[in-house]
Image (tube, rainbow, N blue to C red; front, side, top):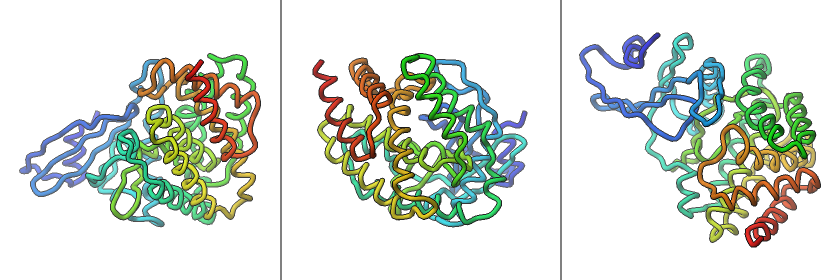
Amino acid sequence: MTTPAEFMLRSGLQSAEESATWTALTGGVSSDLWRVDLPGRSLCVKRALPTLRVGEKWQAPVTRNAVEYAWLTFAARHRRGNVPRLLAHDPEAGYFAMEFLPHPVWKTELMAGRVDPAVAAAVGNVLGELHRMSTRESGLATEFANDANFAALRLEPYFTTAARRHPQVARQLVALADRTAATHLALVHGDISPKNILVGRAGPVFLDAECAVFGDPAFDLAFCLTHLALKMLVRPDRADDLRAAADSLLAAHASQIDWESVAAFDHRVTTLVPALLLARVDGASPVEYLTDVSRTAVRKVAIGMLLAPVSSTHRLFDRWRADIKVSHRC
């Protein structure tokens, strides 16, 4: 097995005469990530893990490292400043290297109460442009036919696990998973979470595209909106700003949609969000920052919306705001 140090030497990123300081970076469950400090420069090295660091046994193909590298390569063709600069790749060993960027993480900003709807709008605009450009670029559907990878990393651990734990909405969850698997419209990042977005001076910088697939771009929006909704439970004092951020994200992304109607796209987002809310408390990888009271509230509201769906994302957030307040009082 190739060691990280061997990868650095083989790729030419480090000479045999140079010393390096390796610092493990935290926050991810699916990969090893290091900051490597060399004389006069710093970079990041990433290696996918065969078994993810979660409570349940969750295995996934390490080829997702190459999937992420390919998505970052695609994104750099269209939005060079919104992804890290790639430095080296060894697909057989499962490593790649990229520049180290010291920008703040969007999740950290949100959790601290620093909620700027303009940041959310920039995320929606860049993501929407990447979705739109992917519908025009020939060959991507074949290059990113990563359906098995996406199922192993998203559909099974999120939808299938939540369905097993909540049989009263299992039919709805399975139907949403099947619909998502069968939809192939654009290149999907697959992990648009605030923890995977840096707030750069020139706009958002996207990371961690291990789940990328040519599939349903509504999944990306629903995934991000789910995290903004959950942050309202942690920062109720910033709930209005978080709602404004969600609206800004949606509006900016909608301005880029031309591959289908905005209404059709919004419908799929609206139906996916409750499923993902439930998955983030009772799937294989629950968010770490909710209390038991908050988790109970999420279950109640998400199941209610799965059984009685709303008609749009705007109405979904209206109902979410109202229902989580009621659930917390109960």
